[in-house]
Length: 522
Image 1 (tube, rainbow, N blue to C red):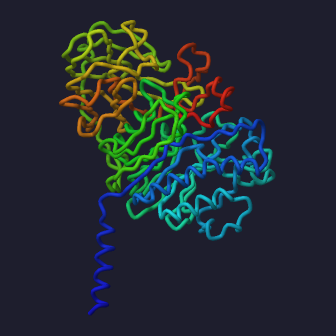
Image 2: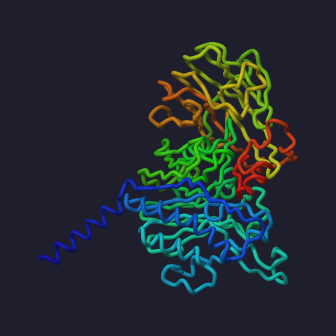
Image 3: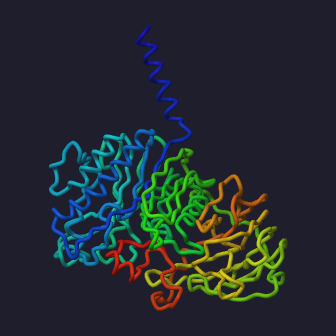
């Protein structure tokens, strides 16, 4: 009889576990330690430097493990933290990472492959904390110049890589970043691979930083069966007013209807900051600070087993007559793109504006400072990034820096005193790839709005009772992936508005800090 009771208990335990509705996740925004040595380092020196960051990883993962965290994500470039500008310069920081199908546990079998010290530490950390760990690292893969036409001249590939370990310390997934951003020390993978991994609480897609803006891999991987979650190591440079880290990453989660675990590096002096744990209905935790320092975020997430991109798409029936466009239209640049704007002149009203085939409509009520200038804009066109162009359709309500209309779109606007007590925003988008953004301000710090204060459905973003803080911008940002082509401009020559995108180099950054390796979005 005792044995039967035990069997029943075990059966019930596994039945309940299989039907769990939430799981606990963590991300760590890492104030990466940058090496002070100049020029290429030998392997011993590289290991010594990387271990400084690994020790911080251990400390934070141990804290998370004690709080029953089940999966944890660390940022892009968090282990070596420096941009060794030359391909040779970063070589000592890389390791050969085997195919996960080889079922390697580096903690248990550390001598199977040479020079894999960092992988051993990560594997043991996953095992010791009983968590899934997602870490960004560098993969060095040999190739044959005689047989492989893509093989680099030095006889090996170097990949920006995410590795995933299960709670036993087994390597279960690795992903090579596809959309590199000025990362000449790394190679574009010759074969595109979409990467996912399974857990008891859902199926996860893996991609990195600039990847999130493109169909391959971000959309393609979400179209695979059962994917409801994304792990997202990043080195993301804020690109206001539309592409600050916490702003767009939360919007991607809401538009795709996925859980997204975004771990960023922390160098706020250079606009690298902003991490979060996001669900389909709003953030569960986020961090944005102008202070230098690491931050551990932990939150419960719902188990999600599908996403918005796997369902049949039916275009919302949103019609806006061009003749209803509001008077006083003007153009101003937002990240070098010519937006068509109309001014927000009253405390209550309905306005519309069109650009190209896109028409946008806004209904609003507001209270606040009469001295603050807002505008409502539309853009339908190709953003001509110097790295890779991408096509945008955007409807946005945003705060201008001054009453001068050319300041609408300035990336330095972080303060607002104006509360919108109701907002309804929609546009004539012809795609399902629409990402709803709500960005607020609190004494100069960027804030997000809880999912309790607004909704997004069928191409419409609505808040019936306003938000927790004054508004910086409320936007619908859409990607038209099929139209990603056109001439490229060099944003380094665009005067005061240069470097308006993630994954963009700053000359000052390169000179004074030896530069961080990937700047995520432009």
